[in-house]
Length: 224
Image (cartoon, rainbow, N blue to C red; front, side):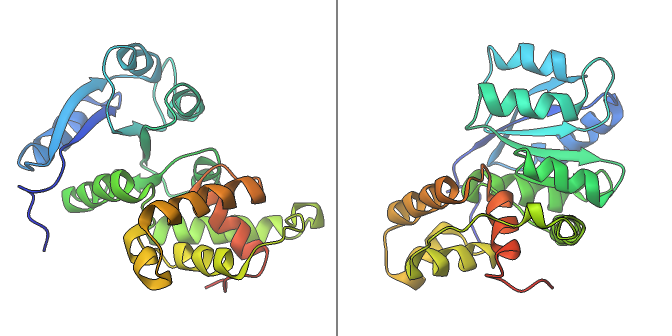
């Protein structure tokens, strides 16, 4: 088990129009020595204004908010602050919405019923590994793929991947961390990250979720 005293502190912001929910999340995370809540906002516009002055590592972003919702805010965050990880929050688990969020850059998706331990795990995972997949996101991505496969135009373009690239992509889809992949293929974590970036360029994807979707569409991994 990891010692929170030795982990780097993750700066977290939350945007949600329900004050009680924000307070609940902040309270549950305050006991974590490796988490620092740095900002909170009631809507996307307020959040974007705060980001001019405060740069969190991870943002918990509600989808449904007045004035500017999460759906509109997410692309703006990714455009202006590409290094900030974003975990989307919602009361619903609509597969089409989750799939869309992941495709446009969300690093994870949680329902608001998620416990404090799940939220903490998601924050640490997206901070360390860029993404946090759970049953909800996996089912949504695969459901989205099955829908899209009806249209042949959605099939991926022919891309020549090396054996090493295919191996690394499969390990990524198996939710292995960068360090775990590096140990398995006997490369440095930095080299694995470089190959991951190259894979995104080759496949025309912008996120880890996009790479997973490409791998499934191309038949490189099995659909569960």
